[in-house]
Length: 79
Image (cartoon, rainbow, N blue to C red; front, top):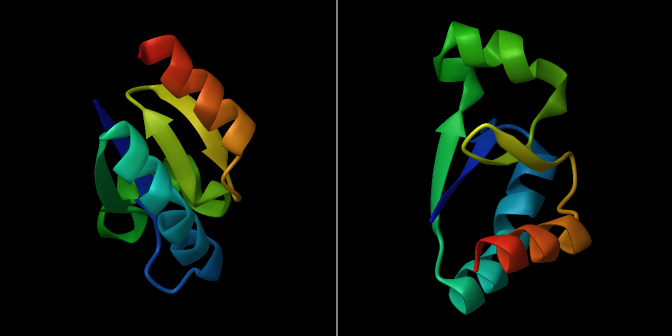
C-alpha cells in the first residue's frame, strides 16, 4: 500500500506529520509518497490551505495533524 502526503517544504505542520508517520510506516510497512503541492498548480489549487493532507488514493485520512485514530482505523480496514 502507498499513502500520499501532500506537503509543502516550508510548512512546519507538514514536517511534523511526516515525522509522526515514521513509526506507523515501520509498523505497517506502507510506502509513503511525499508530494510538494507547490510543484503542481492543480494540486496547489486543490489542497492549498489543507496541507499537510494524508491520502490513500482519493480517500483523505486526515489533514493538518496526524489523526492516529483515523489512521489506525484505515490501516485496520485495509490490513
